Image 1 (cartoon, chains in turn red, brown, yellow, green):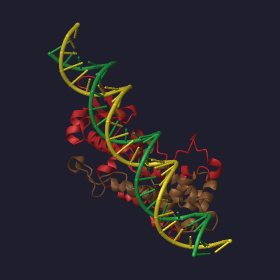
Image 2 (spheres, rainbow over the protein chains, first blue to last red; image 1 turned 135 degrees about the vertical axis):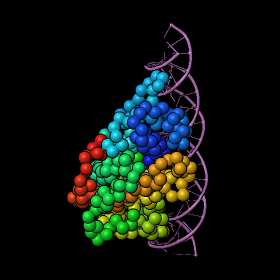
Image 3 (tube, rainbow over the protein chains, first blue to last red; image 1 turned 90 degrees about the vertical axis):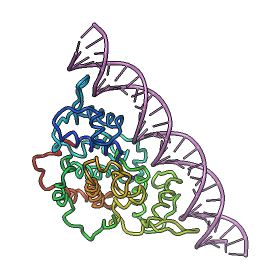
Image 4 (spheres, protein in one colour; image 1 turned 120 degrees about the horizontal axis):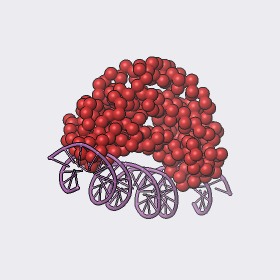
Length: 153
Length: 153
DNA sequence: CATAATTGGACCGAAACAGTACTGTTTCCT
DNA sequence: AGGAAACAGTACTGTTTCGGTCCAATTATG
């Protein structure tokens, strides 16, 4: 369905919440303030810690803290941290595409991937809080749609 | 992994192949010329037919034909035909997002969805054959990256 | 030094997906 | 008119991935 996992959704919510206070926060606290089930939010934070999105402090009085301010964390970074690399097809690099010869289109999907990555990299977590990104999104639209081909979508 | 289904990949390959000849083509022929297993390519074409991407001719000497030229079929249209609507989160419209109150960010995901849809609508199947889309993709990049926030991805 | 609190990593069940097979309907050719 | 070819629809099965849970490693505190 081209939808990202629910974990990623949780991650964004948790990260935005984390960005509101610049202090270490534990999983239980984050669970209560976001409504996300405690084990789940713990898992999400764990993954984000390994990816360097948040820093972790183990032991008593431990918790999590944003590694960077919200403005410097793109949606693409979060998605890549949780869901893995953004590559729409398996036959991008080193994939097991055995029909490469008959397929006709060599690696044209990379182009599509790049387009999506661009769109996702332009939106930061800070933008998810306020609506200030809309102006910038207008700039993302193609300057002219020759003949109006893609009007189907 | 934010990857689209393999069926969609097959669909693009089959459609591009269909666009090379303006004549009805059967599933077996398409299977041989693309390397996609016959039952699978048949399934894909069936779905595409119901979505109006291709037209079908039943009976002997039947087969499939593009409903529109490749230039007028966007990647987004194909993805939506196979994988369903492009909506990254379940809490977009009428979703079962029960944490809407504590979630903080209302429906900010719609913005992200729109960005992706834009990127995907700007690429047509014809672009998948030739590399001519690159110029237009440059236009998709945000005009200015203030402070370079999303440089992470 | 012992204890409690908290993260880190491994495990397991469930749901969605890809792929396949079968049956029915329609159309062309003989 | 009869048979063959090809699409249409449905149902089934194996696999993968996702979401969630549990136990072990680590550290501050008293």
